[in-house]
Image (cartoon, rainbow, N blue to C red; front, side):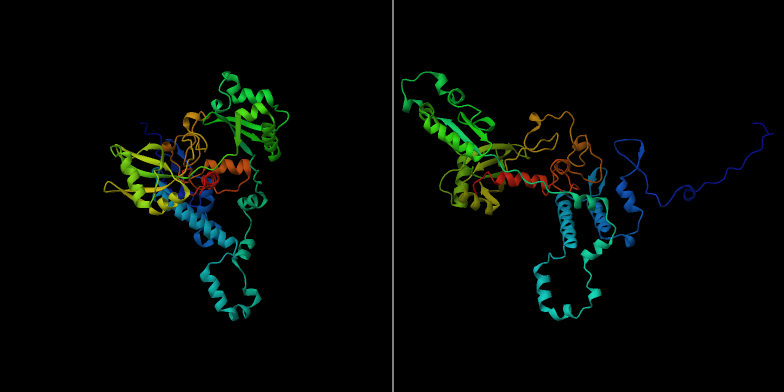
Length: 405
């Protein structure tokens, strides 16, 4: 080293001299080696102290604590996270609408009427007035301007089946006359009746969906007045199906007779229930059995919650026939029928597999899509797999309308 060059003393640099304490800390993502920051919503909340936050910000911080994760895994169980978010939703609804009171609050108000009359007028400020005094946020303005989309009425549907040809005409051998589509095409015209949808159903039937009830009546009158249609076709409205129950963890070696006997003895059921299908259980060599039960038998079985089969207790509850795709998280189809090429995460809603998610805050892709397309106004701060998901509850509601309880 050249001694003629003077050595400069290197100053000591402290972290507090180059780090701004007002900024939120950076975080390293597990899936990406580069340094990335957290969500912008966390930045805005983290810059203020708890004492300076309003009610909505405090609730948001509590919700972040409930939904926090470490190394991609939540601290709380899914049930506790759903419970905590549900309680916060109830708290927000009570703050926004103070008229919602419990029975204990109503009794306190009726027992102390004199205290409410002698209170000064200026001290009778409610939580609702406090919220109005705060500056409106973008989310509150968006919810205020968002209108609920009116629910469209369901189009009427009728089921058309083929009669037993041997009872009406034993000499008829023409297969074209036995085909429903051929018979309807010969005698009816689509211009006469407004038809929305036609699809095949079980037992070689056809489900015809029309625009209005008058179209259904016109179709029935046409079938009755036409001799060829009246002799070969029968029509009826779709009937509601029986609800279903599921029994968990039945060994594969268990005979069906033992299960039917256990159901009849525990719930006082006279007839055997119809087995719909089986689902592979979590334990090896076990299956979940799904039965279809009439309304009275279903109510008895649902109240049991557990049933003894071959000296072992098995859980029993209602089963909803709701399809859900594990690729796009949408309802109504499965993965084999999905049209999406890239998956959607069931936790954060981004375009990756659910098991690869490293997000800290949940975001439901189904409720986000419903808000964008139908203006439903659902909360999105929950996973798509949550039992309290508004989109899932809406699917259950539509399912129950098709069952006879």
